[in-house]
Image (cartoon, rainbow, N blue to C red; front, side):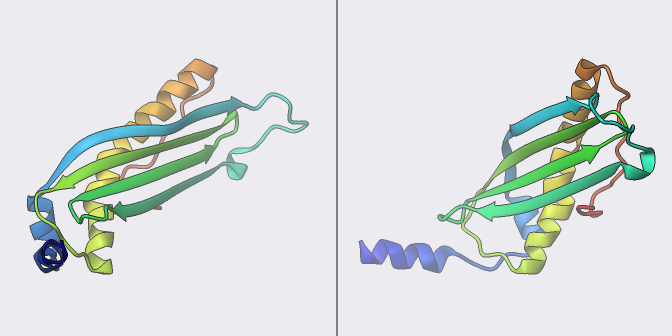
Length: 148
């Protein structure tokens, strides 16, 4: 048993972003939360200046070094409603890896958020339609722009 543990540790290697992206496959996207609450009980209406948008992003690697999970949580408050959309993307990696903080951030920015952003946008638009409120428009983002 100890030999296999040593072999597994020896197989782990430091990976550059290019190496990682070449061996990474998207396996699944899962929603953890999709919610909206229409604002109808406020004494004074919320103004556009009071509106807010927060995008939080996390990266988690599996213990065996062959899986990655990126999680994005979007919280948005518009003049008419509050929204929360939380989704995770699971990636498989063909070989065990070790990632520097720089490679982790680059993976988050260039792959993780880029994959999840359209899912977040669609869930937000669908929820706004179901609530009968104006659809909030998210800012454009391209690969490498990271979380805002």
